[in-house]
Length: 416
Image 1 (spheres, rainbow, N blue to C red):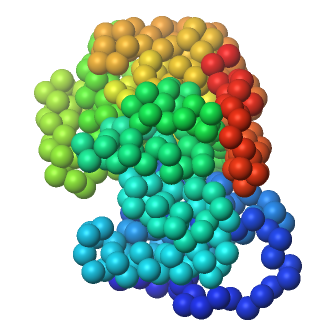
Image 2 (cartoon, rainbow, N blue to C red):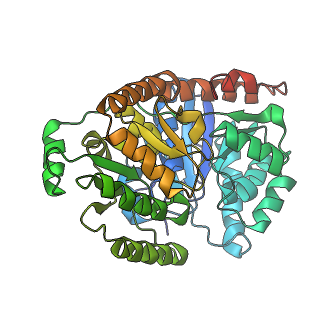
């Protein structure tokens, strides 16, 4: 059922409007807008910041929910919800026909897809409907795929005019595993707004609400509770750190996922939390709309993931001037400079993770220097302005039918 806040889909071509006629029309297709993750936030930033004089944006999702209405309200372009539970039933045929008509009637120039259903089901329909360019966004190391998805991505590798990867590591994965053309596989790093407003009153209020002592060092992570995020490793590291720094407090910000697998992991996580005897120094605060204020009251950011594409939470911590201790997986080494903006540690290694957290906590000078260096790196390479510059350039190349290698233009700063 269509969410009442979502724009109705036009059943016939809109009346001609001479002012936007020359704009490039983009349809973003994303599998779901159930929860707010990195891809959803990146999509929001794209639609908000693309120049309105040059681009006309539309967003289509196959899954949405009333509880996500507050997020959908932040889009300043039409958002459509066509429910699709099964790609092989009669409903899917109807949705496919609507998608085909919409692309033709609205004269969509670019279809930019996110995740498996959008990539492997909707993108071929968009191609048949006559979209001038089909672009796929790849944002992880295949952790959500099933066997059929791996086969589908290899089969469809030639469909896409471009593939945008969120990090150079994901780019290499896509080339090797999906057999994608390197010349059309482009790294476009995430970018965030370089400044946010955080009031000292909000920071003080949160500190009191969480029962944090004024001088207690605070270690924070922002991640939904899933196995891939490595929160169990963080708890074991916290138990080691608090033996050396008993006053240290750990804050875990993020939702407890709702799938069967996530629920089982959450139960094991809470059991581990109790068995380690760290209930007084590790606080689970759940989802929060005050992440920036929580980062502002913290001293160290930790990302113990087992796999990453490129973490928005890591970028937000750098914006807040926090030193970052992260696992050396996925795109993390493209963001964190080991020994300069923070530390990189092996995945699953709670002892090394604890050691690096302890080193930062016991050395205020190092902590401040790393925080400044991290913020400077963010401002140089991971702002929304940098992301939009690469994105706009890639769109123009795709519409021009460019088939020459373009990757060096986009990734020249990726690993330096």
